[in-house]
Image (cartoon, rainbow, N blue to C red; front, side, top):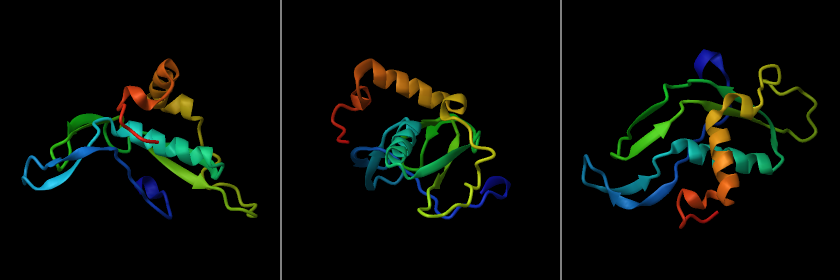
Length: 134
């Protein structure tokens, strides 16, 4: 990882809106939601609600925030920030590896604040895609 950051597992998630054609290869593929940060935040929130998250360290500008197309031709947008999640180890007394650099999410993730405000405005993520199942 950047700067020698060590991790045990790397994951990614996008919200599949529908099945469609890849604009470049014309093969059948999944079409993803444009706001990739929304799904990232949903995954992180779900993990935090499990009470298994010990700390979250945000790597700011892991890649430049941008609006572009992915390999399948879907529009995507991101702020470029990457959360590194340290999960709790039951019975382990060792400090989290990033405890000294862990920051509150609200301080360093403006996308989280924006989404949280939107959720409070209409109760759920229904404003993004009414057909979405949680």
